[in-house]
Image (cartoon, rainbow, N blue to C red):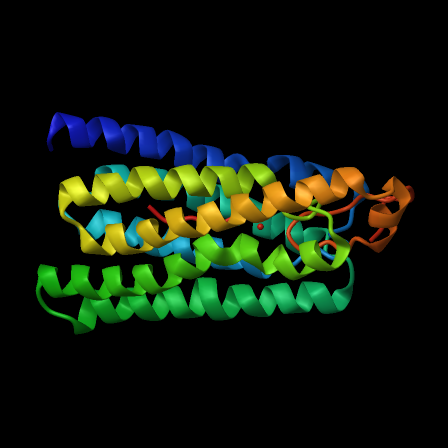
Length: 246
């Protein structure tokens, strides 16, 4: 592996780790309040699937060590987040919904991809291509996941539930891994991370615009109307998920 590409890969790994650990404060609040409130499980279930697939891609591809290691770490972290979500789900319906998503996507879909590429597809190049194509499609959704909060941001004119650091690190992550992909001539790595870099710019732009609106809005107004989507909001009684691919 070229030394420049290796250094960029290490930088990408560091940034990716920061992305994976960025929800820790969010889940610490969930544990303290013992509830996920309006928090949505889908981003974390999908990010776990994304990490599993990229881990499999990195293990399958020759010289894919950097890809495999960081996504191995991501798989562990996202599993913890999903388990905490199941434990502290705000109600039974949310817990059932989360369990169904995990069973369908993280177990069912990943198991299907693994079994198909492992036993039904011959040739290493073909395996890499199929796994890579699936990773590309899913990774684009992962990078755009913070955009799911845009409707809430626009409605409430508050960025409280659009986490800045998640969007910022996804922006950095997309740029670094897109550069790595260019050097490695890996289209499966380059396409989603290039798109992720572009989506990161959009997310940061939205945050900058509505951050000013938040500062100008009366404090009680935006707090009362906020609805959590990508981050929880702890209340006085303690009652009431990023993705990434490299």
